[in-house]
Image 1 (cartoon, helix red, strand yellow):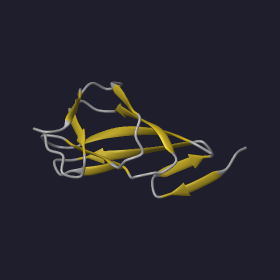
Image 2 (cartoon, one colour):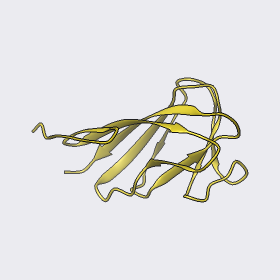
Image 3 (cartoon, one colour):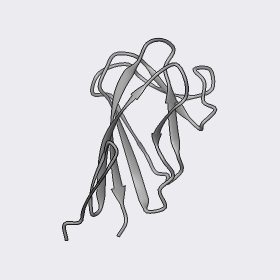
Length: 100
């Protein structure tokens, strides 16, 4: 089946959704809570490290994602994910696997 929905910067096709987000020095939402999400894949598009966590994430408390283009991480959670970087901004590419 090919269900197509577009909202903000997210393109969703049935069981997948993709988007891009720019992370700054303030906690930035990478992906909202989504009940149907099985996996969230985050791919670095720049050269600035990003720290991942909740809405209160800091560079001292977040999970480290290396600042090398193409570096990625898979997260098995449907919770909201946030990111922050220590200086400037960096773009991330997001891919979500969704249940039907």
